[in-house]
Length: 424
Ligand code: SR1
Ligand code: MG
Image (tube, rainbow, N blue to C red):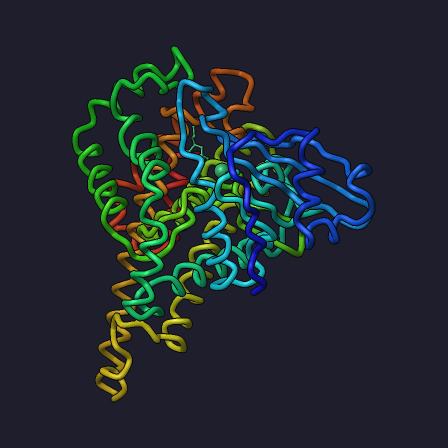
């Protein structure tokens, strides 16, 4: 993998349409990729996420994306400061994910640690997966691609693949991404279950539901058990925010973007994030498009959620068969027939535990998108508040079920069964 150019900025300044051409002209490989004169480069700001500035710059021969962190949360404003260093963690994560799962993330051209910017591949004609799902697009390969991305990026940054010294030195690089982890700890695992200034929900329709979740002691205990896992289980380098807005797609290609929340955490957090957002999309779709076509597309989305899990499990297991070079489950101990049988059983148990984690984290991610600070377009774009609240209530019920029943749900069929019971 080509190493990214290191931009030597001496102080942080927010970039803008006026300053970007000069900024990029100092990066030889990027200037060459854009082509022509910097005076002719076209710049536009396209960021629609919660946190950052995102620019597209196009020249006569190509385009790049520049993503720059702001020192505060874009969604909320300057009253919520955020560390600029998250941009550096994003570039580190992109580099590691490219190594582990080649072709699954945008190419990284340059990193500017002080300027908090990353210059990367302009993906086109890609669109954000969430938007494609809202449009009812069938994407023939995305589930297979994401299953591969998840299996490779998680397996190859885990102790199953890395030696302990290599894993620990990689962990060290990411362990300072504490403030972004804290956002997740609060917004996903804590705030939806207490009165918190950022929380919002469709009101008054869901007022009683929100109060019931705040009072649901068994649920809160399970969510805190999942939070503890998030805080302590450094299983692999996780993307940390793998919802359908963090994936770009065409019919042929799929890329995971925006890994600024990356850290060493539980694998199920990434798999669960994607499955949660697909389940939300499936529930919302029936409201957006009623009738047979809506039902058929909802089934397609649910099929993709199942394929993500089954494809992941198959690929992960095959990596474990062929590339178990790490210090966990030392391969040499299991070479004889009895060893192979024992290891096979252990692999089944590992995947069963990971499935339970996946469902638990998926449930937490579903609930936070209804009761917490940051919501999702799938539900927000349902204009009628009664219809929206009805769909959100189903998301809450399904999320709660996944959390509470995660250890007894042994196959994806159990998830599909729960969906059909709740989303009649
Ligand atoms: C206010 S930041 C909220 C959310 O945006 C990001 O995409 C993460 O999901 C974070 O929790
Ligand atoms: Mg993001």
